[in-house]
Amino acid sequence: MHPALVRKKNLLIALLILFACSIAQAREAKTLAELVAMFDDKQCAECHGEIYSQWQGSWHAKAVNSSLKGMRNFIAVGLAKEWQTPLTKAQLLKCLDCHAPAVNFASEELAVEIGELIVTAFEEKGSAQGVRAAETLAKLNVGCYSCHNIKANGVAPGLRGAPAEKVIYGPNGDDGDDFHQSVASSDLQTSAFCMQCHGVYHAPDGETIQCNTLSGSYRHGYLAAGGSKSCQDCHLNKGHLFPGGHDLETVKEGLGLRLEVAPYQHLPGQITGVKNPADWVPSAVITAFVDNRAGHRIPDG
Amino acid sequence: MVLEVTAKDSDGKELFKSEKKWFEIGVDPDRDMRYGAWQIKGIIDLTLPPLTTQREQYLVHFDTDIDEVTVEAKLWYYLSGGRGELVYEEERTLDF
Image (cartoon, rainbow over all chains, first blue to last red):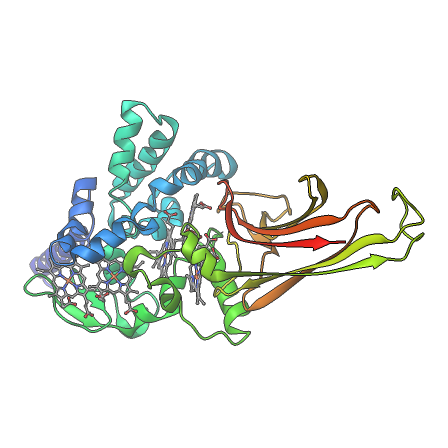
């Protein structure tokens, strides 16, 4: 090949690499503001007001701040002391891939910054700095895009491909006026969709994380015993509030109690320690029946 | 998850009490009990399994001068670390 051509080819390759990097960067946020703007759930409120306010009351909406202590311990004790490993994006995703999936699209530096915010929010609780950190972290959660985009194809990535930017995956595929394109996906209605986050987690490096393990019980306890309901069948009856163990009404639905008592008089002289050994002894057989009507073990964790 | 069964006399004095707990324990590879999601590699499962009914049965003897007993069963739900919520209670009064 002519040297000039080689130079041209090298330039072309360099340009191609640059181009590929810029595509990747388009999906990588350098600041928290950028990350939040990429997956801005507030926009959904305009047209889906009721769903948005249900979701705001849900545990999905506060999935980082409600678990701050555990995550701080992972960073300050788990990584720093037990594993003696630096805080990196890959390490942080061992928690946030489920608690705030948007962090998959943070730059390495931003992810580390988020990890540091978690430590500050917990350790400086009450101080101005701690309050500010918690307010910032409140923007990270299991939001609309987490389910309707980021994790939407996670059950069958081979079949469905990676989720397309800004596209909404839902049960019917109805477009959202001029705001969003939609793709019909039955995946969101499957239990497997929820189990991505509600089961044992396998990180890319092989580490297993056991945060919420009730999926195992759903599969091996409930389905195996003949249960046929999906997670959605039981947990969407208050819409996007997704009530669970924090909701007494839901807890009541999942449990049953029955008491049976059969009194009788026990023969005199057989029970020691009674005041009058010559007398009949008032006695009772007490039986309590406790039912689990949920789709998995109770309690979890 | 706690089932609390008590028996009291007509003055409210406790004659019998039993508690049954359903819960799980996380352990690390050395089988030391752990709380951290990153530390837990195994579960000791002592929870209520789905689609089943648990039966807890007690044979209780009272004293010979007892003529009235109130039996109570309470089912409590505890969220990790939180205070218990009373889910169901049932009561029977026995006359001897």
